[in-house]
Amino acid sequence: QVQLVESGGGLVQAGGSLRLSCAASGRTFRSYTMGWFRQAPGKEREFVATISRGGGSTNYADSVKGRFTISKDNAKNTMYLQMNSLKPEDTAVYYCATSSFSWSSTKPSEYNYWGQGTQVTVSS
Image: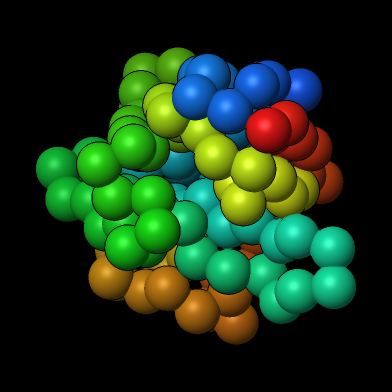
């Protein structure tokens, strides 16, 4: 069993930055691929970024590549998403999740534990 808690969301102007955190408890943090997903109103949940168990490999959606950075601190059981140059279209609820699949997994169905989500709103 894994418990995930996101934090760091908020309201920011376009061009601004936010840093999301995902604190994990339960089974060993290093045992899982981890990812960030987001869901905007009326849209399906979509992949944002994933990171491998050891943190050495990452994968990004094209829409955030070059602006967002995923990282993790296994000693602190915490994953991060640094979001820069935010755009109004980044507005969504952001979720962290764990998977037993490879870090290249981008389908929400391949992730088994989820946090409650944190709202990110980018104003124009």
